[in-house]
Amino acid sequence: MFKRNAMGNTRTKFIAGAVLLALGLASGSAMATNVYGGGATLPAGAYVGFGFLTSTNTKLSNNTTGGQNNILSTSLFGAGKGTGNATSYCQTGSGGGKKIFDHADSNPVTTVYSGTNPCTGAASATEGFGASSSAAIDPHFVGSDAPFSQSEFDWYRAGNKSAAGHQPVQFPAVIGSIAIAYNKPGVTLDLTEAQVCGIFNHTITQWSQLDPTATGAINVVYRSDGSGTSFSLANHLAAVCGGSATAHFIADQSFATVVSQFGTPASFGWVGASGNPGVVNAVNTTAGTITYAEAANLKAAPSANVKVAKVNHFDPYEDLPNDLSLAVSSERVITGANATTGRPVTAPVTASGYTPVTQCLNIVEPALYATNTTRYSLLAVSYLIANNAGNGADVAAVRSLIGSPYNTALRSSVTTIGNGAGAADGTGYAYINPTVTSGAPSLADRVNSCIN
Image (cartoon, rainbow, N blue to C red; front, side, top):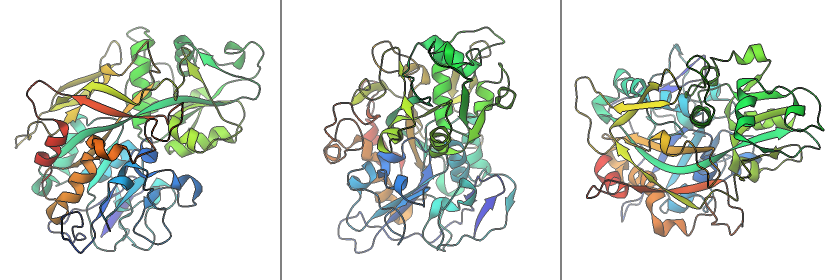
């Protein structure tokens, strides 16, 4: 049985030995493996393509169920799937996605999962990341634009996942630029960092403060769900905006927490929307609005009403390289935000009652991509998360999916990331070239040892 809570953060109760579809990646296998997951909306286009943008079923990209959106062969997951194998990706947002994966959603109600209606509509209609089966199937993976926090790591054990899965494993997958998108006819924005700060701390409230020829109030649309995009925006704002010990941005997945030292979104008259498509649609339909959103989605589904601002003269497409080399650390988690600056704080993970597997919980320190003066610097690092153990017959398929960002041969077939499509200005996505301590295993090697 799948269960869903009233707030839209859903889960499947893990059943040890649950019936999973047979492995299809192993040589000689005659059956298909269907790998189910979901979470962050920001990397969805890179992972599965943008078929969901032109369908009424906006939450699921799946090439296994009739009537669902096919994963494009030019996307990361589509190019990497073996013959007859498939992946579904259900967009719930990073925060809700990790709750589903960890079995940490609260206030569940008894709603039986229906395989005939997977992952349709809003996140509140999501069950089990849209697995196209009536069997009780625990999700194989989750995507998140915010690395695991200590509390989220603890959810995994509290949700009775550790008996079968032991612990979550985490690998940085892709980078996405976060665009400042707006709907203001006649205005073209090239924002300074100070102006970006002022928009979100509510000191810049009129369009005339950004363009002397414009009039009217600025109305901010923000992510109302737990969002790695909010975390990544706040990571940048906390690094560049300064402030005081009692008036600074706070890096968090909740936008209300991000701006809490300046006031509440409601007190500013700002409007919340769920998911990246939700905020973009709100801006598209309402003049005078501005938001932060995943840049690649905006390019894939352009609107005459929505424009994208430059920041410090940098463009989120032209000035995002095809790949970025970033150092990767292990066994560290987010433990909160600095009380004076609001910037993310990381520390070694602690695990009560068991020992974490080394080199399996991998993180790019948020400070490493918080700001940069030579390229576009509002960036999110998106992660793929899976179970350390308990993958059973599906282990090869899960390894293949989690390891796909590090498969250099695969990249030539992927057009949703970097300049693979031949576009001079890029896609809004970039690959991560992870660097590790000298002598340590590569992340590609870690995938094989960490997923069992």
